[in-house]
Amino acid sequence: MRKSIVLALLVLASQAAVVFAGESSKQVIAPTSPPPPEFFRSNEFDIGAFGTYATGAGSETDSLHAWGGGLDLTYWFPWKYAGVRFQGTGASLNGGGGNDRNQKSGGQFVGDPDVTVVPGFPAVAVSGGDSGNSAAAAILTGDLMLRLPLDEFWPKVHLAPYVFAGFGDILVFGDVNGGMASQTVTVTNSAGVSKQETFTAQEVNSLHVNYGSDRVLGHFGGGLEYRFTPHIGLFGEAALDVVNRSSNNLLQVNCGLRFAF
Image 1 (cartoon, rainbow, N blue to C red):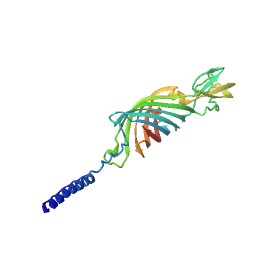
Image 2: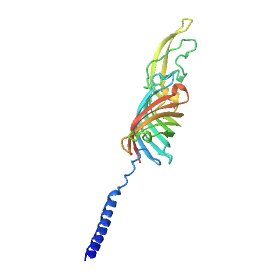
Image 3: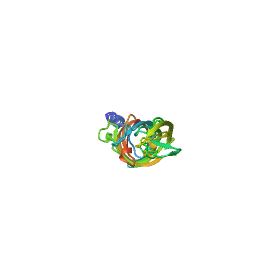
Image 4: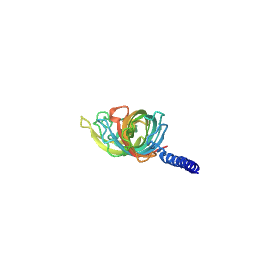
């Protein structure tokens, strides 16, 4: 009888050990936490919308400036530190020096107002006919992009400085010629002979004179982008648009939002 009781107790103890061992093993296994989301990714498409301000960067810009806005499209390569971008900006371009004036006598324009248009008589400057010296412009660029996401070094700092370089085009729209002005004056030559002559001046927009209607440019600069989420960011950048001559160069500053997919 005693042997039977001892054997029964041993069987019950072994079953209890198996049950408790199973429960304890279940408690030890913990779920693996998912990796943190990437804020700057490879194979990423970005769409940016921004406001822009541009000012003359040459030594003879005469208060050249522009206000406007634009859009950009960026693709980041599988190596997420490099990408390509297309950017388009529309702006109202103003300034760039006084308007050029063509002057005529007898129905024919003769060019600079400081020339003598009546042989033997002094030159006459005609006032009026201001064209406003402004024009609508479009700046189109394609750039190679390089960026460095700082959250790889500081996980909570979702900031990425970047640089870019490329080339593009500036298109200037609107009429070349502005208003007209006429002036009748009495001119006297060195011999003391006087006569009346009517002169007509026509303003020519100096932006069209300096840029033409279509001019290739170089595009260089850098910026910063901060991501609030992996898909929404705020950016600011500055670029130098190198246009033909130093007096035509522009410093362009863009600030806006960027959406990443």
